Image 1: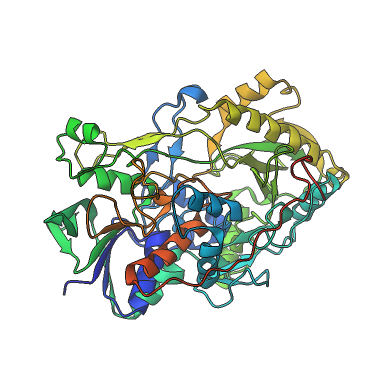
Image 2: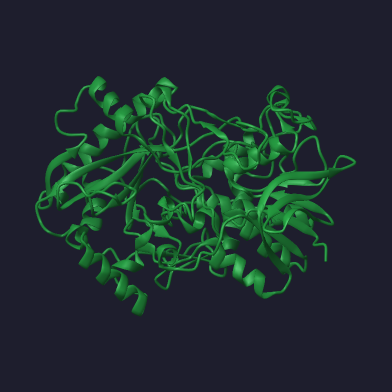
Length: 550
């Protein structure tokens, strides 16, 4: 049976989109190259460092040598598994700031202002922490807060307050700016991925078919997308759709698929012998990401997670979680956070903090100097832009990824601010009983040149790539999709994932990616959009003249 729609990618947006379509009575095929998400490495929140480093679950992408980061290649994990990157990410839930979406609308994405997207954020979630007009109570995606039993979590929030910053009861609600509890897609001790929240309920209807294989290109007839060419164990076949094809394959694989299908920069396509179907120079352009550094301190009390950093400790945590779904294994250990402005005159936060009661590499492979803690900090609105390009016309070959990190001079100034403002926070009385010496960058790293060198050598991706099929007005030569997510220049093809973001949002990208899938469904169904909600954000009243205001 030919479905109404074929979606490529069972990730954050693709699962949400499929769910809404099948709940509206449509039949959907969703094409996914990755395998099952069953197993503790994915489902146990505390095991988050493992799946993003396993080729079984990760596409294994990395950037080309980054010229402004000393020629380093930075890994670019993307989920190759049911649930996509929502099955391998850190589970942090951040909608983004209201002004992010207002910017989208102002840049040509009509109907994507904050008032337009807020109803979809509400529809998608059941919030178990905050209760307000901003939050949802009946959605498939459970959003929770950690217990913050470790004293360091609350010390971090207190330190922010002592440094003169506000606290926020809900950074996903009226006020993002400030320090407070971090939210996560964790439910009943389990990773609540897009697969758990959306895909499995959709499959239960009998109207969703999950089809395995590598999508090679979109198939067109008379200028209209009619299906997807897929290689699987039975060879190369075309999975056809009655109405539309939707690409939800990630900000890396979606532009790759568009280009393999003849949609992209004409000269680049011809270089690889691909017939040009639509000359869209914006395909693969506008690549953005968040960079961050880990500022680490030794702990003077044995209150960190380091006491569990051994085979026995990890085994005990895993055994408890397997038996009961509780304990340290039921948390991602990102339970407090902060959003601040880097300077007076910055309208809304441009620095984000993830606090972790352990000094460790993000990949979980090495702990630093025994008991310690760290904060992940970085600017949120970098002006640097990169590209995704084909290396060849072979669908099996990974694309060429160039983030061009730190290519804009403002990025360096913002990272210097990150280091100096963070040191001030950890110098507050709240940490007096816990903080030893600074592991990194180290007390001797103080000048602009020294901080720049540290950033050049140690900055890491936060794994938030986006923007490579930008949404905009139809007459915008660099736009790839229109505000209804239709690919400009062809018929019957849409994109619904983080590729369409005109500009990166404030914070982690899973929440806005899921929202994009939710909203895409209403555009596709053509049954009208949810009514806008005019609930504006609370902004610092003196932002023009003050860097912080409690």
